Length: 170
Image (tube, rainbow, N blue to C red):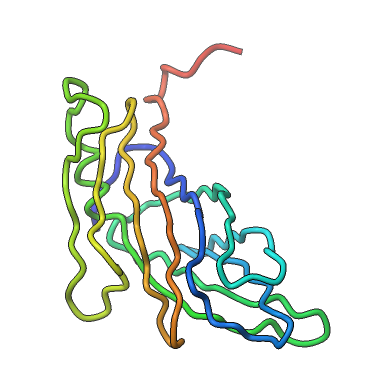
C-alpha cells in the first residue's frame, strides 16, 4: 500500500482518438472511471469516434497502487450500452512526485517520465509528470483493450487538502 498525502485526484478526460464505431449512425461514447466503490462518468458525446470531453472527474485515492479502471461505452437508447474498450492505470509514479518538495522548481519542469511497458500496461506513449504552477500534473494516453482501436487522453492532477487545523474559518 502506497501512502498518499491528503487530497484528491482530479482526472480530466480530454478526448478519445479513433474509437471503434458501434452503430451505423456513429457512436455516442462516454467514459466511466471506477476506483474503490467510486464510479464517475462523463457526459455522452453524440455521433463521434473522436470525442472531445474536457471534463473533470475527481476521485478520492487511498492506495496509489490500486488500479483505476476506465471503460468507454456507446450510449444506446433501446438496448444495453455497448462496450467500446477499457484500460487501467495507477497513480504510483504521480504519488511519488507529490510527496517531494518541488517548491523551488520552475513551473513547466518535467519531473519524471513514465514509459509504456510491462504486461498489462495500457500506456500508449511516454507520460510526463510536470510541476505546473504549484500542481503535479501527468498527461496519459491510454490504449483501450478488448477492441481493435481507440486511445483515451487524460490529464491527472493531484489536489492537496490543507492539513487539519489549517482550514479557513467559516
